Amino acid sequence: MRTIRSNFYQNDDSSCSFTSSVPQRSGCVSENLTESVIDMRLGQLASKSNAKSVKSDSETEGFLDISQAFSDFSACSSDISGELQRLATLPSLENALVNESGNGAVCEPEPCQGFLQRENFSTEIIENISPEDLQPTVKICIDGLQSPSIAVKRSAAAKLRLLAKNRVDNRELIGESGAIPALTSLLRNTDPWTQEHAVTALLNLSLFEANKDRIINAGAIKSLVYVLKTGTETSKQNAACALLSLALIEENKASIGACGAIPPLVSLLINGSNRGKKDALTTLYKLCSARQNKERAVSAGAVRPLVGMVGEQGTGMEEKAMVVLSSLAGIEEGREAIIEEGGIAALVEAIEDGSTKGKEFAVLTLLQVCADSIRNRGLLVREGGIPPLVALSQTGSAKAKHKVILVDV
Image (cartoon, rainbow, N blue to C red; front, side, top):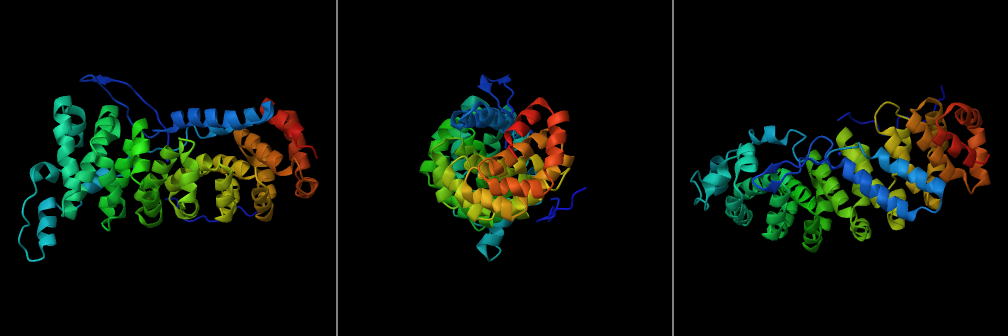
Protein backbone atom coordinates (compact mmCIF):
# COMPACT_ATOMS: atom_id res chain seq x y z
CA MET A 1 0.00 0.00 0.00
CA ARG A 2 1.40 3.38 -0.99
CA THR A 3 1.65 6.03 1.74
CA ILE A 4 0.38 9.38 0.54
CA ARG A 5 -1.13 12.53 1.95
CA SER A 6 -4.65 11.20 2.14
CA ASN A 7 -5.92 12.84 5.32
CA PHE A 8 -6.34 16.44 4.31
CA TYR A 9 -9.32 18.18 5.86
CA GLN A 10 -11.03 15.22 7.45
CA ASN A 11 -13.32 17.12 9.75
CA ASP A 12 -16.67 15.59 10.61
CA ASP A 13 -18.74 12.94 8.93
CA SER A 14 -21.43 15.21 9.17
CA SER A 15 -26.64 16.94 -2.53
CA CYS A 16 -28.46 17.98 -6.36
CA SER A 17 -30.42 15.73 -9.00
CA PHE A 18 -33.86 15.60 -10.49
CA THR A 19 -35.74 12.32 -10.33
CA SER A 20 -39.25 13.01 -11.43
CA SER A 21 -42.48 11.12 -11.21
CA VAL A 22 -45.53 12.43 -12.93
CA PRO A 23 -48.71 11.44 -11.16
CA GLN A 24 -51.84 13.35 -11.97
CA ARG A 25 -53.73 15.08 -9.19
CA SER A 26 -56.39 17.65 -9.83
CA GLY A 27 -55.01 18.07 -13.30
CA CYS A 28 -51.66 19.23 -11.90
CA VAL A 29 -48.30 17.66 -12.63
CA SER A 30 -46.27 16.64 -9.58
CA GLU A 31 -42.48 16.36 -9.55
CA ASN A 32 -41.36 14.67 -6.34
CA LEU A 33 -37.99 15.60 -4.82
CA THR A 34 -36.61 12.45 -3.26
CA GLU A 35 -33.18 11.50 -1.92
CA SER A 36 -31.95 11.45 -5.54
CA VAL A 37 -33.76 14.63 -6.42
CA ILE A 38 -31.86 16.40 -9.11
CA ASP A 39 -29.29 13.83 -10.15
CA MET A 40 -30.72 12.18 -13.24
CA ARG A 41 -31.43 15.50 -14.91
CA LEU A 42 -28.11 16.96 -13.86
CA GLY A 43 -26.37 14.01 -15.41
CA GLN A 44 -28.24 14.52 -18.65
CA LEU A 45 -27.68 18.28 -18.70
CA ALA A 46 -24.03 17.99 -17.76
CA SER A 47 -23.59 15.38 -20.46
CA LYS A 48 -25.06 17.72 -23.07
CA SER A 49 -22.93 20.64 -21.91
CA ASN A 50 -19.67 18.72 -21.84
CA ALA A 51 -20.33 16.90 -25.11
CA LYS A 52 -20.36 20.30 -26.89
CA SER A 53 -16.98 21.35 -25.55
CA VAL A 54 -14.81 18.28 -26.12
CA LYS A 55 -12.38 18.07 -29.00
CA SER A 56 -11.93 14.35 -29.69
CA ASP A 57 -13.70 11.03 -29.38
CA SER A 58 -11.59 10.02 -26.38
CA GLU A 59 -12.32 13.32 -24.62
CA THR A 60 -16.02 12.96 -25.34
CA GLU A 61 -16.02 9.48 -23.85
CA GLY A 62 -14.20 10.73 -20.77
CA PHE A 63 -16.56 13.61 -20.16
CA LEU A 64 -19.61 11.42 -20.63
CA ASP A 65 -18.16 9.19 -17.92
CA ILE A 66 -17.73 12.28 -15.75
CA SER A 67 -21.35 13.26 -16.23
CA GLN A 68 -22.46 9.79 -15.22
CA ALA A 69 -20.38 10.07 -12.06
CA PHE A 70 -22.67 12.85 -10.93
CA SER A 71 -25.88 11.12 -12.01
CA ASP A 72 -26.40 9.48 -8.62
CA PHE A 73 -24.78 12.19 -6.59
CA SER A 74 -26.72 14.22 -4.07
CA ALA A 75 -30.13 15.60 -3.26
CA CYS A 76 -31.66 19.05 -3.35
CA SER A 77 -34.83 18.08 -1.53
CA SER A 78 -35.66 20.89 0.81
CA ASP A 79 -36.60 18.61 3.70
CA ILE A 80 -34.07 15.78 3.66
CA SER A 81 -32.09 17.14 6.60
CA GLY A 82 -34.79 17.03 9.25
CA GLU A 83 -36.09 20.56 8.85
CA LEU A 84 -39.71 19.46 9.15
CA GLN A 85 -39.05 17.80 12.48
CA ARG A 86 -37.35 20.96 13.68
CA LEU A 87 -40.37 23.07 12.82
CA ALA A 88 -42.10 21.65 15.85
CA THR A 89 -39.33 22.99 18.10
CA LEU A 90 -39.50 26.56 16.82
CA PRO A 91 -41.32 29.12 18.95
CA SER A 92 -45.00 29.36 18.19
CA LEU A 93 -46.11 32.38 16.25
CA GLU A 94 -48.17 33.61 19.21
CA ASN A 95 -45.23 33.42 21.61
CA ALA A 96 -42.93 35.04 19.07
CA LEU A 97 -45.34 37.93 18.65
CA VAL A 98 -45.39 38.41 22.41
CA ASN A 99 -41.61 38.42 22.55
CA GLU A 100 -41.34 40.93 19.71
CA SER A 101 -43.62 43.37 21.50
CA GLY A 102 -41.06 43.59 24.33
CA ASN A 103 -43.62 44.24 27.05
CA GLY A 104 -45.58 41.02 27.24
CA ALA A 105 -48.46 42.34 25.13
CA VAL A 106 -49.41 40.52 21.97
CA CYS A 107 -48.76 42.54 18.81
CA GLU A 108 -51.67 43.41 16.58
CA PRO A 109 -52.67 40.22 14.72
CA GLU A 110 -51.64 39.93 11.10
CA PRO A 111 -54.29 39.28 8.45
CA CYS A 112 -54.91 35.53 8.15
CA GLN A 113 -52.56 34.95 11.06
CA GLY A 114 -54.37 31.72 11.87
CA PHE A 115 -53.22 30.22 8.59
CA LEU A 116 -49.64 31.41 8.96
CA GLN A 117 -49.57 30.15 12.53
CA ARG A 118 -50.03 26.54 11.46
CA GLU A 119 -46.64 24.87 11.18
CA ASN A 120 -47.49 21.17 10.73
CA PHE A 121 -49.61 21.30 7.64
CA SER A 122 -47.42 20.23 4.75
CA THR A 123 -49.37 17.14 3.69
CA GLU A 124 -52.74 18.91 3.82
CA ILE A 125 -51.60 21.99 1.92
CA ILE A 126 -49.41 20.32 -0.68
CA GLU A 127 -51.58 17.31 -1.46
CA ASN A 128 -55.14 18.51 -0.85
CA ILE A 129 -55.28 22.21 -1.72
CA SER A 130 -57.43 22.72 -4.77
CA PRO A 131 -56.14 24.66 -7.76
CA GLU A 132 -58.77 27.38 -7.27
CA ASP A 133 -57.61 27.90 -3.68
CA LEU A 134 -53.93 27.97 -4.51
CA GLN A 135 -53.73 31.58 -5.67
CA PRO A 136 -55.31 33.14 -2.54
CA THR A 137 -53.11 30.86 -0.40
CA VAL A 138 -50.00 32.08 -2.20
CA LYS A 139 -51.14 35.70 -1.82
CA ILE A 140 -51.53 35.27 1.94
CA CYS A 141 -47.99 33.95 2.11
CA ILE A 142 -46.55 36.73 -0.06
CA ASP A 143 -48.32 39.34 2.09
CA GLY A 144 -46.79 37.62 5.11
CA LEU A 145 -43.31 38.10 3.66
CA GLN A 146 -43.92 41.87 3.87
CA SER A 147 -44.95 41.75 7.53
CA PRO A 148 -42.94 43.74 10.11
CA SER A 149 -43.01 40.62 12.29
CA ILE A 150 -40.06 38.27 11.90
CA ALA A 151 -42.25 35.39 13.10
CA VAL A 152 -44.82 36.01 10.38
CA LYS A 153 -42.10 36.34 7.73
CA ARG A 154 -40.56 33.06 8.90
CA SER A 155 -43.90 31.27 8.77
CA ALA A 156 -44.78 32.68 5.34
CA ALA A 157 -41.41 31.66 3.90
CA ALA A 158 -41.84 28.17 5.37
CA LYS A 159 -45.28 27.83 3.73
CA LEU A 160 -43.97 28.93 0.33
CA ARG A 161 -41.04 26.56 0.68
CA LEU A 162 -43.40 23.62 1.20
CA LEU A 163 -45.85 24.71 -1.47
CA ALA A 164 -42.97 24.83 -3.98
CA LYS A 165 -41.42 21.56 -2.89
CA ASN A 166 -43.20 19.03 -5.11
CA ARG A 167 -45.61 20.57 -7.58
CA VAL A 168 -44.55 22.22 -10.79
CA ASP A 169 -47.77 24.24 -11.06
CA ASN A 170 -47.18 25.65 -7.57
CA ARG A 171 -43.68 26.76 -8.52
CA GLU A 172 -45.01 28.48 -11.62
CA LEU A 173 -47.80 30.31 -9.78
CA ILE A 174 -45.57 31.41 -6.89
CA GLY A 175 -42.99 32.76 -9.33
CA GLU A 176 -45.61 34.60 -11.36
CA SER A 177 -47.17 36.04 -8.20
CA GLY A 178 -44.10 38.07 -7.27
CA ALA A 179 -42.78 36.07 -4.32
CA ILE A 180 -39.19 35.86 -5.54
CA PRO A 181 -38.04 39.46 -4.79
CA ALA A 182 -39.53 39.26 -1.29
CA LEU A 183 -37.88 35.89 -0.63
CA THR A 184 -34.58 37.24 -1.95
CA SER A 185 -34.65 40.08 0.58
CA LEU A 186 -35.04 37.50 3.37
CA LEU A 187 -31.75 35.84 2.43
CA ARG A 188 -30.02 38.53 4.48
CA ASN A 189 -32.42 38.27 7.41
CA THR A 190 -30.67 37.96 10.76
CA ASP A 191 -33.01 35.19 11.92
CA PRO A 192 -31.31 31.93 10.76
CA TRP A 193 -34.56 29.95 10.37
CA THR A 194 -36.17 32.69 8.25
CA GLN A 195 -33.05 32.73 6.08
CA GLU A 196 -33.13 28.93 5.82
CA HIS A 197 -36.78 28.83 4.75
CA ALA A 198 -36.20 31.61 2.19
CA VAL A 199 -33.15 29.99 0.56
CA THR A 200 -34.88 26.62 0.39
CA ALA A 201 -38.01 28.17 -1.10
CA LEU A 202 -35.85 29.79 -3.79
CA LEU A 203 -34.11 26.47 -4.44
CA ASN A 204 -37.47 24.76 -4.96
CA LEU A 205 -38.74 27.60 -7.16
CA SER A 206 -35.57 27.50 -9.28
CA LEU A 207 -36.49 24.01 -10.45
CA PHE A 208 -39.12 25.67 -12.67
CA GLU A 209 -37.21 26.98 -15.68
CA ALA A 210 -38.90 30.38 -16.00
CA ASN A 211 -38.16 31.14 -12.36
CA LYS A 212 -34.41 31.02 -12.94
CA ASP A 213 -34.52 34.35 -14.77
CA ARG A 214 -36.79 35.82 -12.11
CA ILE A 215 -34.32 34.82 -9.41
CA ILE A 216 -31.40 36.29 -11.36
CA ASN A 217 -33.33 39.50 -12.05
CA ALA A 218 -34.14 39.83 -8.36
CA GLY A 219 -30.41 40.08 -7.66
CA ALA A 220 -30.36 36.82 -5.74
CA ILE A 221 -26.88 35.60 -6.72
CA LYS A 222 -25.01 37.86 -4.31
CA SER A 223 -27.49 37.08 -1.57
CA LEU A 224 -27.13 33.33 -2.15
CA VAL A 225 -23.36 33.78 -1.85
CA TYR A 226 -24.01 35.63 1.43
CA VAL A 227 -25.98 32.62 2.68
CA LEU A 228 -23.10 30.34 1.64
CA LYS A 229 -20.86 32.38 3.93
CA THR A 230 -23.15 33.00 6.90
CA GLY A 231 -26.03 30.50 6.97
CA THR A 232 -26.73 27.34 8.91
CA GLU A 233 -25.31 24.11 7.54
CA THR A 234 -28.62 23.36 5.81
CA SER A 235 -28.85 26.92 4.45
CA LYS A 236 -25.35 26.64 2.99
CA GLN A 237 -26.18 23.32 1.37
CA ASN A 238 -29.38 24.63 -0.19
CA ALA A 239 -27.70 27.86 -1.31
CA ALA A 240 -25.09 25.73 -3.11
CA CYS A 241 -27.85 23.70 -4.76
CA ALA A 242 -29.74 26.86 -5.75
CA LEU A 243 -26.59 28.21 -7.41
CA LEU A 244 -26.17 24.87 -9.16
CA SER A 245 -29.72 25.08 -10.46
CA LEU A 246 -29.07 28.60 -11.79
CA ALA A 247 -25.77 27.44 -13.32
CA LEU A 248 -27.66 25.06 -15.60
CA ILE A 249 -28.12 28.17 -17.75
CA GLU A 250 -24.71 28.62 -19.36
CA GLU A 251 -24.54 32.41 -19.20
CA ASN A 252 -25.16 32.39 -15.44
CA LYS A 253 -21.92 30.54 -14.67
CA ALA A 254 -19.69 33.56 -15.19
CA SER A 255 -21.99 35.79 -13.12
CA ILE A 256 -22.08 33.31 -10.25
CA GLY A 257 -18.29 33.07 -10.23
CA ALA A 258 -17.88 36.85 -10.49
CA CYS A 259 -20.17 37.34 -7.49
CA GLY A 260 -17.75 35.42 -5.30
CA ALA A 261 -19.39 31.99 -5.06
CA ILE A 262 -16.23 29.91 -5.52
CA PRO A 263 -14.38 30.63 -2.22
CA PRO A 264 -17.36 29.80 0.05
CA LEU A 265 -18.03 26.67 -2.01
CA VAL A 266 -14.42 25.61 -1.38
CA SER A 267 -14.96 26.37 2.31
CA LEU A 268 -18.07 24.14 2.29
CA LEU A 269 -16.00 21.48 0.54
CA ILE A 270 -13.48 21.60 3.39
CA ASN A 271 -15.67 22.18 6.43
CA GLY A 272 -19.14 20.96 5.50
CA SER A 273 -20.99 17.79 6.41
CA ASN A 274 -20.89 14.89 3.96
CA ARG A 275 -23.96 16.27 2.22
CA GLY A 276 -22.45 19.76 2.18
CA LYS A 277 -19.23 18.45 0.64
CA LYS A 278 -21.18 16.62 -2.05
CA ASP A 279 -23.25 19.72 -2.84
CA ALA A 280 -20.06 21.78 -3.07
CA LEU A 281 -18.44 19.20 -5.36
CA THR A 282 -21.45 19.11 -7.67
CA THR A 283 -21.73 22.89 -7.89
CA LEU A 284 -17.99 23.37 -8.42
CA TYR A 285 -18.08 20.75 -11.17
CA LYS A 286 -20.81 22.59 -13.00
CA LEU A 287 -19.35 26.08 -12.51
CA CYS A 288 -15.82 25.01 -13.49
CA SER A 289 -16.81 24.27 -17.05
CA ALA A 290 -16.11 28.02 -17.43
CA ARG A 291 -12.39 28.78 -17.60
CA GLN A 292 -12.53 31.81 -15.30
CA ASN A 293 -14.18 29.70 -12.63
CA LYS A 294 -11.45 27.09 -12.94
CA GLU A 295 -8.94 29.85 -12.20
CA ARG A 296 -11.03 31.07 -9.27
CA ALA A 297 -11.29 27.56 -7.84
CA VAL A 298 -7.53 27.00 -8.02
CA SER A 299 -6.88 30.42 -6.44
CA ALA A 300 -9.37 29.62 -3.67
CA GLY A 301 -7.41 26.50 -2.73
CA ALA A 302 -9.77 23.85 -4.08
CA VAL A 303 -7.03 21.47 -5.21
CA ARG A 304 -5.70 20.54 -1.77
CA PRO A 305 -8.99 19.20 -0.33
CA LEU A 306 -9.79 17.54 -3.65
CA VAL A 307 -6.48 15.64 -3.60
CA GLY A 308 -7.19 14.68 -0.01
CA MET A 309 -10.60 13.29 -0.99
CA VAL A 310 -9.04 11.19 -3.77
CA GLY A 311 -7.02 9.42 -1.10
CA GLU A 312 -10.02 8.80 1.17
CA GLN A 313 -11.18 5.53 -0.36
CA GLY A 314 -14.64 4.36 0.65
CA THR A 315 -16.12 7.79 1.39
CA GLY A 316 -18.21 7.88 -1.78
CA MET A 317 -16.61 11.18 -2.79
CA GLU A 318 -13.25 10.10 -4.21
CA GLU A 319 -14.55 9.58 -7.75
CA LYS A 320 -16.33 12.94 -7.73
CA ALA A 321 -13.20 14.66 -6.46
CA MET A 322 -11.23 13.14 -9.35
CA VAL A 323 -13.84 14.46 -11.78
CA VAL A 324 -13.44 18.02 -10.49
CA LEU A 325 -9.64 17.66 -10.46
CA SER A 326 -9.79 16.55 -14.08
CA SER A 327 -11.71 19.72 -14.90
CA LEU A 328 -9.19 21.92 -13.07
CA ALA A 329 -6.35 20.11 -14.85
CA GLY A 330 -7.64 21.74 -18.02
CA ILE A 331 -5.68 24.90 -17.16
CA GLU A 332 -1.97 25.29 -16.43
CA GLU A 333 -2.56 26.68 -12.94
CA GLY A 334 -4.66 23.65 -12.09
CA ARG A 335 -2.04 21.18 -13.29
CA GLU A 336 0.66 22.96 -11.27
CA ALA A 337 -1.51 22.92 -8.14
CA ILE A 338 -2.24 19.20 -8.57
CA ILE A 339 1.49 18.48 -8.77
CA GLU A 340 2.27 20.72 -5.80
CA GLU A 341 -0.37 19.08 -3.59
CA GLY A 342 0.81 15.53 -4.30
CA GLY A 343 -1.97 14.75 -6.75
CA ILE A 344 0.01 12.32 -8.88
CA ALA A 345 0.73 10.07 -5.89
CA ALA A 346 -2.94 10.14 -4.87
CA LEU A 347 -4.07 9.29 -8.41
CA VAL A 348 -1.57 6.42 -8.67
CA GLU A 349 -2.94 4.98 -5.44
CA ALA A 350 -6.46 5.28 -6.86
CA ILE A 351 -5.33 3.22 -9.86
CA GLU A 352 -3.89 0.61 -7.50
CA ASP A 353 -6.71 0.38 -4.97
CA GLY A 354 -9.75 2.23 -6.32
CA SER A 355 -13.00 0.99 -7.79
CA THR A 356 -13.28 0.12 -11.47
CA LYS A 357 -14.83 3.50 -12.22
CA GLY A 358 -12.34 5.23 -9.93
CA LYS A 359 -9.42 3.70 -11.86
CA GLU A 360 -10.88 5.09 -15.09
CA PHE A 361 -11.24 8.59 -13.63
CA ALA A 362 -7.75 8.46 -12.16
CA VAL A 363 -6.27 7.62 -15.57
CA LEU A 364 -8.35 10.34 -17.21
CA THR A 365 -7.05 12.92 -14.72
CA LEU A 366 -3.44 11.75 -15.14
CA LEU A 367 -3.92 12.06 -18.88
CA GLN A 368 -4.92 15.70 -18.38
CA VAL A 369 -1.96 16.37 -16.09
CA CYS A 370 0.74 14.54 -18.04
CA ALA A 371 -0.27 14.72 -21.70
CA ASP A 372 1.74 17.84 -22.61
CA SER A 373 4.45 17.79 -19.95
CA ILE A 374 7.61 15.71 -20.02
CA ARG A 375 8.31 16.84 -16.45
CA ASN A 376 4.94 15.60 -15.20
CA ARG A 377 5.37 12.27 -16.97
CA GLY A 378 8.71 11.96 -15.23
CA LEU A 379 7.03 12.61 -11.90
CA LEU A 380 4.49 9.91 -12.71
CA VAL A 381 7.35 7.45 -13.30
CA ARG A 382 9.04 8.55 -10.08
CA GLU A 383 5.83 7.97 -8.09
CA GLY A 384 5.75 4.37 -9.26
CA GLY A 385 2.89 4.88 -11.68
CA ILE A 386 4.12 2.58 -14.45
CA PRO A 387 3.44 -0.84 -12.83
CA PRO A 388 -0.20 -0.11 -11.93
CA LEU A 389 -0.76 1.46 -15.36
CA VAL A 390 0.67 -1.62 -17.06
CA ALA A 391 -1.49 -3.87 -14.87
CA LEU A 392 -4.56 -1.78 -15.70
CA SER A 393 -3.79 -1.99 -19.43
CA GLN A 394 -3.92 -5.77 -19.11
CA THR A 395 -6.74 -6.37 -16.64
CA GLY A 396 -8.78 -3.16 -16.54
CA SER A 397 -12.02 -2.32 -18.27
CA ALA A 398 -12.03 -1.53 -21.99
CA LYS A 399 -12.34 2.18 -21.26
CA ALA A 400 -9.48 2.10 -18.77
CA LYS A 401 -7.26 0.21 -21.21
CA HIS A 402 -7.95 2.79 -23.91
CA LYS A 403 -7.12 5.69 -21.59
CA VAL A 404 -3.92 4.04 -20.35
CA ILE A 405 -2.66 3.88 -23.95
CA LEU A 406 -3.10 7.65 -24.19
CA VAL A 407 -0.86 8.29 -21.14
CA ASP A 408 2.38 8.23 -23.11
CA VAL A 409 5.20 7.64 -20.62
